[in-house]
Image 1 (cartoon, one colour):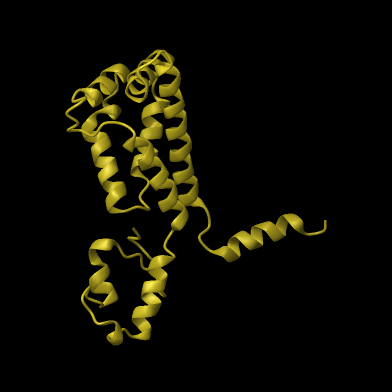
Image 2 (tube, rainbow, N blue to C red):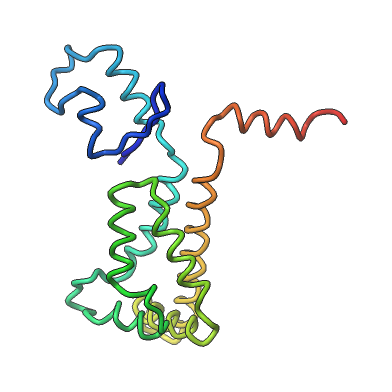
Length: 185
């Protein structure tokens, strides 16, 4: 799902106003598309793919856990919050960050905030959160270990989102960086 793009003037457009800015209603006949429509749509498809891919990996890790209304484990997120003794890990906060990420896939709110949440946990609380998460992932004696691996995977995915957001979007900038290292000194 692509929700933002840059076009000519560099103005970033979001999904909720794409129809207006594309001047292309969803039911427009294909034969009525203009060159301008084609250019704008091609810009849409090239919008920040690395940030979006990194966010999709992060969201997939969260999808391994129960939802807020999971009938099988209705207290999971409350248990996570209590284990971490952190308001950052409150279900409402995580829900807000996930909503932003689904609405704007190039958004970094989930990544930045979840990294902050885990960074602020001391070893005891991190271990307790890992135990809660691990029990959901596995019902055997590896629960704490698997929970810690999940936390590390989330941290790595979140870091990837932040790095992808800061990386140059222009292929020419990457090429210039590479060439600057390969020049004969």
